[in-house]
Image (cartoon, rainbow, N blue to C red; front, side, top):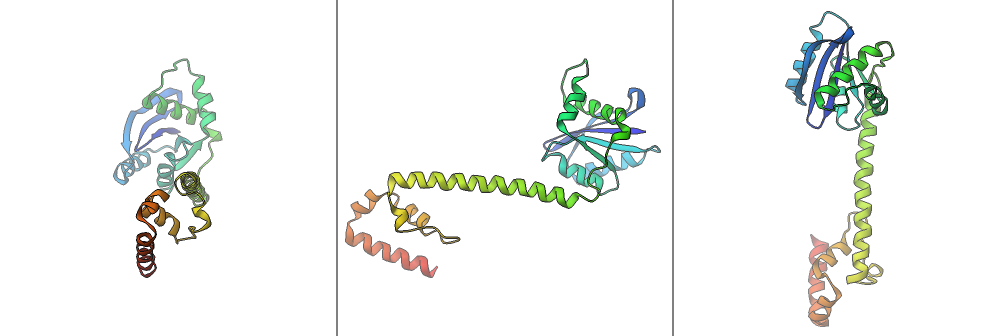
Length: 210
């Protein structure tokens, strides 16, 4: 029975390998999130003669690529809820917190709750990847909505009621391009009617034929 505790952070992970009674087989060491370094970890895990299980905290974004890669190489991976792991770690008298200490605590969790560990990503890989992509989609669309609201507020100041004349529709960004070209109603007034009409017609013709 060997527990591999992995504390995952951005770009790297800290690994500790432990047996029951707190016997540490491998002192905490860092690995980068590259195929070569993960392959080295996989080789190390498979070199043990005993049943080995990997335990890591569910960190949302960072742990997913590591967990998926290890699972794809037939490694038992358990992703523990962050709140549950926090409660387990808080039981320790030693409250210091570093990546190395965290990896030891995670490995210890694996030993303590060995029979309760649930294998992650057996057939849910696609679902979890879609959930991850959905979070990214909602984040991007949220930024887009905020940008549109901010753009609308600015237009009310520099070009009031311009939305009644021009609008953006799908891939047609006519309003945005118009504002980018003329910036403010005062700029149009300074050009004069004839010059603006001529310039606008040239712009509209060039835009429609582009």
